[in-house]
Image (cartoon, rainbow over the protein chains, first blue to last red):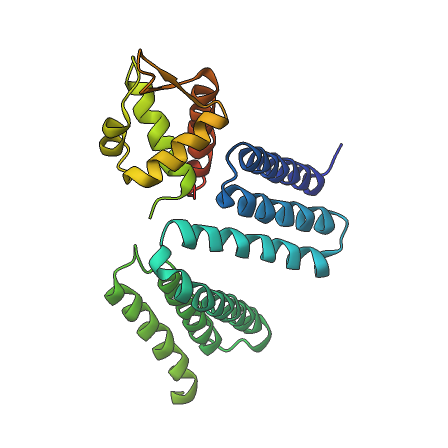
Amino acid sequence: MMDLRIISYLVSIAVSLIIAIYFILGYNKLRSTTFLTGFTAFLLISAGLILNLYNLSFVGYFFEAAGFLVSSLIHARTVRRYLAIGIIPVAVGETLAFFFSLYAGVETLLFYSKSGKKINIITGTGFMLISVSIFMQLIFYVVPANLQLIVQLAGYSMLISALVR
Amino acid sequence: MRSQIKIIVDILDALEQSENGAKITDLVRKANVPYVRLTELLDELLKKNFVELVGEAGNYYKITKNGAMLLDEYRKFSSFAQNLGLDVD
């Protein structure tokens, strides 16, 4: 029986290749840059998935990231043109901050099993809340600013407990 | 600002709605394109056989089969792009 990893990758590769092909067909018919950029994005994503399937993740994820970057660029260019210049570098920074704060949260919570200190749960949750607040900033147009600030405040307040105790 | 493909689609769309063809002055209004730009685009569309001139004086523009096919292709592909959250540029 084929394992789930292979099935999942094969389906993902097939879907992104079909989308890439559809984009290039659209470009051939209409000569629209949206389609050419879409083709580039999904070709890079497909290449990344193929490399990941063959356990070449150190290169594969770069291709996937490049593909999604191109994809986000066309979205920003076509959907929110006025934000295109500012949003991408900010979004890249926020994404990295989100990932690392989440990672710090997971590591801290795992560390609890080793240290047995309940404070790790508080600080770990604090890191998690910070990552949630960063994610809220990434989707700022659907999340009320006050809610994001409250979550951020709660996250950092929990971190300070590491010093207080 | 509309891209060239969007302007062409608006012209073809306006022509598709005019069963007996449309005069250039009607198209200026319907496709919302300045007269000079419109004449340039219509010349190009004539050369590519997307539109044809009809009427006794040959001053009515009508969409051809090729033009209708281009319009269909545009609708099909722009719907695909919109499903992925993109506008056709």
